[in-house]
Image 1 (cartoon, helix red, strand yellow):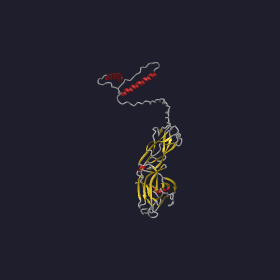
Image 2 (cartoon, one colour; image 1 turned 30 degrees about the vertical axis):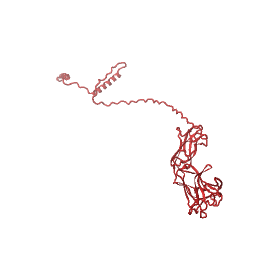
Image 3 (cartoon, rainbow, N blue to C red; image 1 turned 90 degrees about the vertical axis):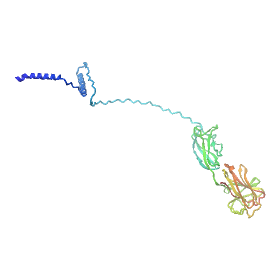
Image 4 (tube, helix red, strand yellow; image 1 turned 120 degrees about the horizontal axis):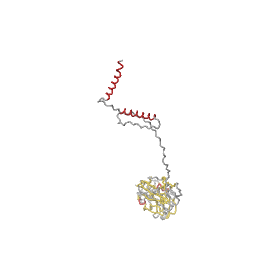
Length: 396
């Protein structure tokens, strides 16, 4: 048949056209994309691995590597397995053994202040007042304080205190003791401080802590003013004697009868005075009924401050209403040991007037004195009704 003879020719013509198309100019072989290259390389690698597995053992296969191509475009994400790292075995740090420092040796003698038992710092104390300062101390050393130890003055204002006061008991380490000293407040106003320490049996002084600081007394002194000492009030608290000349030989009972022959000392009120006035409360004294007899009163102690004054009015009581042969010597003094010291004296006769007296006691400031009031008969003792009107110590 005709149709069957032409088929081979047709196929041959198509084959020739296909060969000619492969050699036509102007069309280049397309370059695979970067992604195609990666996929191709991956496929070749898988094929090579499969081929290697399929080969019998002992056959050497040359690996096929893909041609390196610069990456272009976006790469698909690649998943990587999570790597689990082994934990290293923990190494413990070296153990250090703490070695305590060597203890500091406790010194033999050391004081620790505990508290002020009396008169804490800046206590107000009137000028001239006697007071007892007490500290509580702890033995902070390693040696026992014995009665051979002493409290000693270490500086500042001594305030009339002693140079040293022996301890009254033994004090072992860690124990406490109260130590005291008797002092007198200065007569000048202001703040006053006195330093004190302890002294051991070898005469070495020591104080608070490693620096051996002193413990101290510190007071504030305010000078009192006005009426400071009333002899009328204090008269019954003193003691009274009488005698002849300067020798006392008889004790006089205060407040006895006006006609007591051994002497009179008493408080009287509303008496007729030589100037014609009627008194208030006065101190009436009469010497012993002997020529040159006397009566003397010794009063409770008083500490004088600078600026103190003794003041009074001196005269006679007139039991009969008229002056007689009254004539006496008034004396202001003080007792020093067993001796009488006269500060001032006044001769007085009955002349119709009272004698005002004013004595500045500043020369005795800071001293604690036992004052004396003395009346001496200046010759005969008759009518010697001597009166001390308003005897007192004032600070203007």
